[in-house]
Amino acid sequence: MELTDLFIMQKQLDTFIEENNGVERDVFREKLLALTVELAELANETRCFKFWSQKGPSPKPVLIEEYVDSIHFLLSLGILKGMDDLLEWPEGEETGDLTDLFIRTQRAVLDFGERQDRASYEAVWVLYRAIAETLGFTPDEMIRAYREKNDENYARQQRGY
Image (spheres, rainbow, N blue to C red):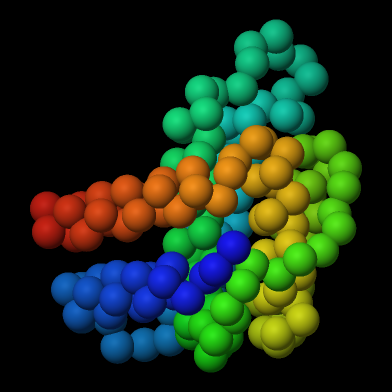
């Protein structure tokens, strides 16, 4: 899946948010934490780890919205570290159930936060692909959901979110 347009859209949104809020400092750590929180929110909506509950996962529209919340921060972190030249979603083989994928993705996100290099950044993307595939998200669905959430994020800023 092609990422160039998503990086462009994210860079424009980040600039708008930072100008709108007077942000003039490096917000890498805050965005890294935001990514881990969004990933946890997605895990919570899948309920994959809740062995004690009979309730199933949230509906697909809720799941994909939580998923693209993470993608916003993943893109943004790449922009901050000059990795927005990543043209295609990295390929890789990651298997396991959702619980395993979430744990490994959290670990990969934190590893990227420490190393801040291309290999660790791409490793996060590979795991995010595995989560998307496990949840049954198509590339078109992900792009559409990202665009919708991007528009909503602009509207939120204009409303003083």
